[in-house]
Structures are given as C-alpha cells and as structure tokens.
Length: 156
Length: 119
Image (tube, rainbow over all chains, first blue to last red; front, side):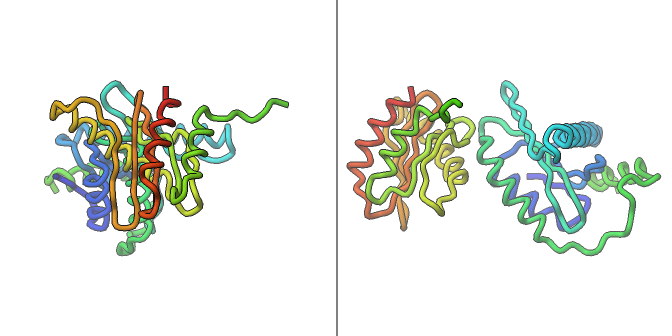
C-alpha cells in the first residue's frame, strides 16, 4: 500500500483509514484544494484535478447547506455504477481538512462512514508541530501546490 | 394532521427485541451497510454494528455461493460476551444482537418469521 503525505502526522491516520475501510483512493486536502496526503493515485496531475474538484464540491455543498439549512452540509456520498465517492470534512489542530474516498463493492458506505468517524477522531487527537502562519489562499498558492505534489510523488 | 409513518419492519423488530437477552435488532442494507430501521436498547452502537454485520453477512453469502453451497441461510457469530445473528433477503439483512444467555432457538425462529417482512 502506498500512502504519501506532505506532513508526517497525517500518515498513520490515513493509513489506518485506507486499511480498515478498504477504499481504493483516499485524499486528504485543505479546503482550498492543497493536497496533504493521498493513496491510490499514480500521477500528480490526477491528484491535482481530484483536489480541485473535491474542494469545489465541498465549497459548493457547504454554501448550499448554509443557504438551505443555515449551516454547511457535512458528508457527501455519490453512488456510481461500480464505484462510489465519499467526501467529508474533518477538523485537526491545524484547521479543517477534507477527505475524499473512492470505493467499490469490496466495502460499503456504512463501513466507510464508520472508519471515517475513526479517522476524524484520530486527526482531531494528533498533536502536530506548529505550522508556519499562512493565509488560506496565499499569493504563492500554485508554488505551494506544486511543492506538495512534488513531495507526494518523490520529486522534491 | 397525518399519523406518523411507521416502517413496515417496526413490528417485526419490536417482537425480536422483546425476546429475552436480545439487545437490539436492525434491518440493514446489505450493499451499503446502512441502517434502514432499528429497535435498539440504549448503549448499543447501532450504525457500527450494522455496517460490520452487513459486511460479514455479505461475505458469508458470497463464500457460500463460491463454495457451491447455494444461498446463505441463518448466520450466527458467537463472541465472548454476546452473539450477532443475521438473515437476509432482497439486499436487506435482519441483524439481532444478543447476550450469551439469550435463547438462540427462539431468536432464530423469530428472525426467520421476521425475514418474511423483508419482501
């Protein structure tokens, strides 16, 4: 199993989630679209696209939830013919994250939900080293994005 | 004002959970592992049991089919401090969680009767 993370404290929670929930693809990303960890991708360009789309879906559903329900919607699940997508937010000491998981009939939505609850608890409990202060969307967003992708795919 | 909607499984689940030693019963989607309806005692973590029991039942059913044994009938898991029983039909699984002292024969009869409500 190949788990790649930008920061080490994300590795163990993500590994446990992938092992337990049996998902094919897992992504941890900042709500802005910056990738923080991944499993199941082989190309940086795919990670970049998936992160951008996941961040956009998360932002859209959150805003839709605020307008309809007064607060952001949480989990999104979309069932395809053979594969399903699960998208949900988590909170860490470093701020909010979004988790995207893709799974097939080797597991089930109930199991993914169950193990995502555990992932969320682990992410909330970890104590990473303090992060350098940075805005959510800094001017060097693209530079940071490319740096993270390079770290994940061993080109840093 | 209209009366609150009752699930078609409510009576069967209530009858099952009334059995001595039964801690709860649920109708779960086999493919999703999501609870469709449940009747649980306080303290039972229904969604976790549902997801895991549906996954177990599904794998048992597939194993029975792969072995050429046909459809999976009654599924029972005996653990140190309790039992999980399951029986399925039409992508739905009826799951019962019971204490070790529970009368498994009665539970089995009640579950096989209740599975008829799954369609």
